[in-house]
Amino acid sequence: MSGNRRLSVACGVDIGSTNVKVIALDSAGHIVARASRPTPRDEEQLSIDAAVLFASIEEMLVEVCGDRFLLAAVSCSGVGEDGVLVDERLRPLTQALAWFDPRRHRIFRALRPSLGSDESFDAESDAVRTLVGWAWARVQAVQGEARSWVAIADFAGALWSGSAFMSDTLASRTGAWRSLDRRWAEDRVMLTLGATDLLPPVVPSGSVVGHLDSPTLRAADVLDPEALVVAGGHDHPIGGWAADQLAPGAVLDSMGTAEVVVAQSPNGRIDRASHLEVAPGILSSGTTLLRVEELSRNLNWAAQDPDVAVAIRTLMDGAMEPAPVLDSGYFVPGTRGGQLPSYALDAPKDPHARASAVLGALAHLGRDAVGAVLGGSDAPVKCGLPVDGCARRVG
Image (cartoon, rainbow, N blue to C red; front, side):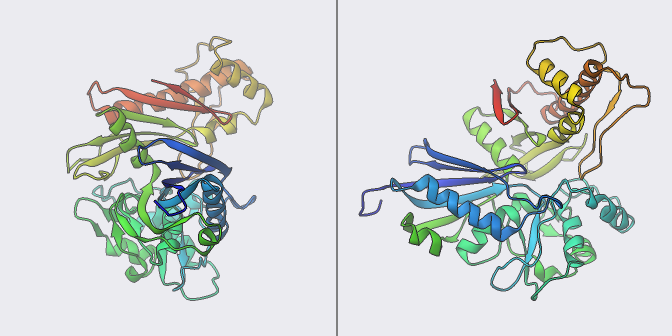
């Protein structure tokens, strides 16, 4: 607590695919302020300028603190695969290739023959992985010498603390790190990033990285002199950990840009199956289980047809019963990494039928994801469904 009698708060920053959110928490864990802005992206290429993002985050922190609060600690979480090369002063040399950018598929096809079929990594080897971003970044024209790779979710924390790091839940998303032995696969790193010394130290999500220093926050008089930076990491494991804190053993089904089903497991060793992915447990020796499926991008693609868009909204509002095509296979969902959705050749043209087929296919994906994470248990499922920016919560 500072001498000016303002309340010290801890702030959490969530860098999402669509929006950046900031909340301030008091010592009892109550949310006392919040702010949200669209994630700043290049309108044509979907990529993120890390410096622009950082400036936006600092503006939001000033906004939530105002003249009432002092920032005593901050932790950033967010998208798991995006990142940038930085120079020795942590200035970004590249933009961040979005995890859903379609260009990833071409890059991954070129890498695939050299990656092999090793299933011991935390996540499946596909176009979404960070190692694809590594390969893309290496061929970009940069002004300056690259000294490190920093994930987008860790970038602000690295700048504030003055040192590059990687949260372990983000290392799990690279396709080149195993949480089992917390080691990098040197052959995959060399193939894509080109040098192992570009990888920063991997730290546990939830650990203190260092003291927070920011000229902007100091000038705004919102910074506690003893403020700390805490490693955040991948937003989905953190969300699953939070759900587990509120309802021990619960499974979180988070439906946003992607649908992610996530849970905490006390087991330190999990064999991946049914497209499950793993990450280190948060503040525990256990494991995070998760499965990711496309959601919003499939809905947005189908909604390009105005009549189908109206039908989807009507069905989701419960104002109309779905057509009997939920199990038809008329809609083929797009896969992660930017692969486009499509309709089957025999799909009907009727907007109501198409909307029903879309929602049916996505519901089946979600059902299978929940079943894979549950693994036969009867744990409660906590679920959230954003619709046009409004989150509908069901217990």
